[in-house]
Length: 219
Length: 412
Image (cartoon, each protein chain N blue to C red):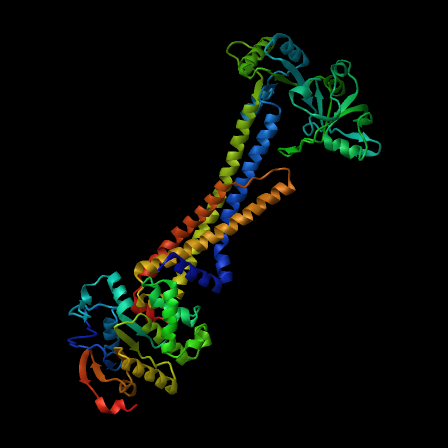
């Protein structure tokens, strides 16, 4: 790098409980993406520690990281990231392909996952035959299929109109009630208000960490 | 991720880019097609030519003024050699007791001094045939089979009888639908009576063996003079005496030609083994040249595949990022791209094999050259293509596997 060292994150000390619904907020450049990549095990910290289910992620090899991502993290991206040439059912199966689950079991579980997001009737459609909201629901089903410890969503409503965005957030609310741990990364405080805990970042540091308990529950 | 998993991924991406896939494969297709075609044709030709050469029998040899000439120097020394004459033939007949049957023939020079031989019957004239002057035992020594009529007799040769044995095609064309035997033909305005028709022999080295006419050597020399060297052919009944018989004949001729001890023979002795060796040397050369061409095509094909795989890696960067986020290890990604490249090239190989086999079939259908497709070249072609795919896929695959998932996910 250059002469000046820039730390995307510096001095962050966070603990996220199982079953929580957390929003990580901050303007661009605040380090929220870096934090998300760390949580999602796509990156490892240069210094400091990250423990996921009693495992020190910093010491893991590339292959072990891949395995943790496969088993512990379910990603939902802003731009969906569905494979265009696969139908919904096949897209949902992707994580199981990398954990060597036999085909029949994969199909059964993919159907279950699609049912969880109310898309059973769209199983054989390809992404370009689905609406934005449906695509994101396929992505959510894909994130859920491996029964991960964390559902990690990066601006999941960013590419959706507000009505569809609300549907997706409602889906997250439902999944949270069903016991899933959800971490939502967003710059939008209105979306963040759906979560049970809101962590605000600024310049790589935690600015605030609050539980806006009552207000958001009414949704 | 299992092999079949990757296979289905690969097939899906092929289907999406049919034209591109085909163009990518062109180099490999051309390379493998060439290999298969050439190998099949050369193998078939080998069998055919060796069959044709050995038809004369491995128990015979030929003494000839020139022998096999492969360089100008050889030509120059051969031009200084003495002609072989009918007297030489008689001397071998007399003094070589291991030579069981000794005969001779001569051949009208077809293009060197423009002595074009025409044969006519009625209004039909066929130009530029190959005319042989032969001894009556030529048919036996050279295994000439007569399907209709008979071969020339000793009496006919001794008494310069105007009799002729026609090649199959010549007889067919001069006397369509009727029996040629007993009819008369004119060879360069001389009248001959057809006594026999030869079996159909096909083409060897671009020479149609069925457009020939064989007349008594004595008649031939009356027509064209005695100044041309003749070929002496010898049949040896006991194969184990072949070398001895050749030596005997050599001694006879050397003494007749007054060769001194330090001189060379002044003539050449050719056996079918010589001819087979010559042919094999020649076909090995042609083979090597074509394999060279095929290798260039394969290298180019490999580079094209590498190029398209690199493009594919760039195009599918988000997909690679996603797969990594979903738990694909570096080696899963590497394997996916490597296998894709191998399958791509092997598909080209299969197409090449089919095209090559078709080409070989076509050649054998349109020409008398047989082509034989064997398992060896097919497996080799497929293997070759796969290796090309493996080599050209390596770098793109490593590049894909090394992509940082965060960066990869960000590019869209």
